[in-house]
Length: 247
Image (cartoon, rainbow, N blue to C red; front, side, top):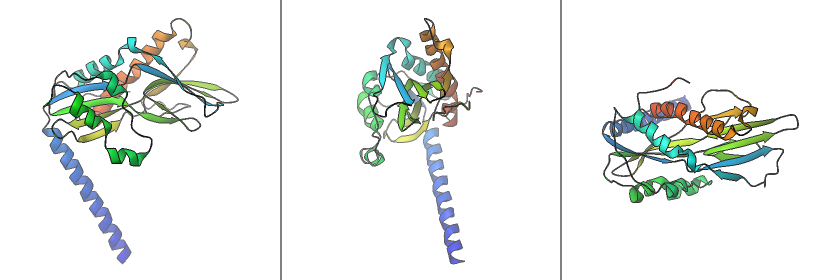
């Protein structure tokens, strides 16, 4: 009986803690009037192979600067956020933000804090907005011990078949413009399409239609589609936008 009482007491304390955290977040969100949007997806597409491939096979990347994905993300986020917030343009060193990486070792991240917090504090102007929304690359496991991140193409080979997957993995941070604390961080979810190779974020299988001279344009359009369909859902889940698109 005593163990049951202790267990119930512990669960009640956890519930109270979660409620307090939600209330604090809601209160802070209600105080936000002006926001700036920062996109740091970068200008490279990663190329990854897994399955019947040696683990030490290095990954590759190609430039996609001409695709203008960060500009597209800022425009779409601004459209989604306008109406609830006053979105103001901000200046930031885009390449420097895209180069920021979290450590693969969790205790290291806990010790040094969120790397985007310091970058927003020192490298973004104008100062003094109520909050800054940072959209950056996220990671996902893929295949035999590999990870993929951000914008990329991944191929998984088996003895019987091979699969090509494109991905647009990203996460959204809401950073307080006064204290620079991270109010919330959320990873963009998969778009609900159950596939052979499922990643922890927006992705889709591709086929032979992406081969040939028109393949690059088709690839860009498919990546843009992943972003434009998932961003309204992610911002809506964070209660930053009232607009959500159906999957």
